[in-house]
Image (cartoon, rainbow, N blue to C red; front, side):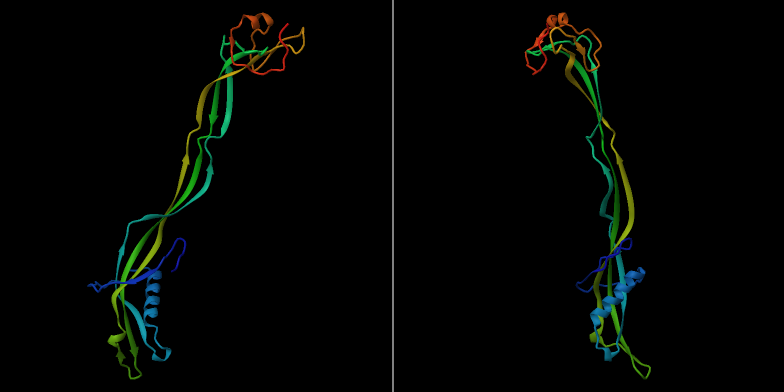
Amino acid sequence: MKTKFLTATALVLSSFSPVLITPAFAVTSEAQADLQAACEAFLNPDDAAEFNTEPTSVSEVTGAEFLSDSDVLSSTPGGVLLSQTSVYNANSQHRHGGSPNIFGGFTVTSVYTGGSSETLNTYSATTTYTFGCRVWKDLPNGNTIEPNGLQIEATQTLDETLVTRTETVTVNNPNETVVTAGDGVICISPNKNPGTWRNQNGYTGACNTTLFYSLAGIPDPIPSNSLPPA
């Protein structure tokens, strides 16, 4: 078996029942060398015999192209967070359980990578050669003999797989934008009594004790180290 990139050749020898072969020798130089090597391997004469051999009655059939290899050259995973913004929803102030802070609703926009890849695909095709081998010997008197018992019938096959082309495939999936509802602190209560309320998370509206007590509460408790408003 012989394998070469760009002239990748995988050789498989076999034999089958005799059939009528139309002589042809339109083969690649590599295939011709492989056919010659196969004939020499079939003959395997004694060095002193001085027999010669060559492929004969060669025909070929090339199969369909197929994907023989695929290598990922580069890739970027999808689903990686690129950016995230939170925008306060107007008039969404509320309380959470026993927390002394004021909360608000937010629209959260997250952008994730869609992912990309670059792949090198290699395509090949297999040509099957059917052949026989002529065996002869040149005698000192100028005559040539071709013993019947040494001839190799045209029932041998050799498969040669060659790379036909390569193709680079680039995939760039678009980024994905996901919009969700969020909840966050917009007013932090004073950490001492009396004290000053502090705005949080981009909220610029009023933050005070009067607002705190005017808001409806959501029963879900959120732990807080802040002191209750004065």
